[in-house]
Image (cartoon, rainbow, N blue to C red; front, top):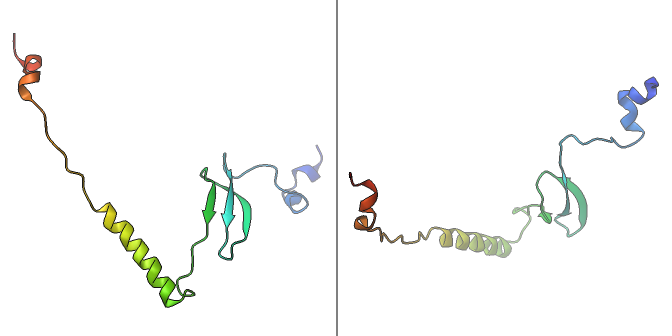
Length: 98
């Protein structure tokens, strides 16, 4: 094998024929302006969306996003009520000494 194939600058001429990580998944990336590109990502997802810069948004849009976020947090705080219907007499036979 020639030294040209083993040279580290070979990647300048063509793409690298190996991946840095064992498995990267093809994912559609949606940019802020709505354009899309295909990338490789470490988790299998259908689509990734770039975060929105809140400094660029108008005050109305910013308040709408804040209300939407607060509504999500309010719904998650509700804890389900757990009922205890364990009857000790039903399982007494398993730990009773014979």
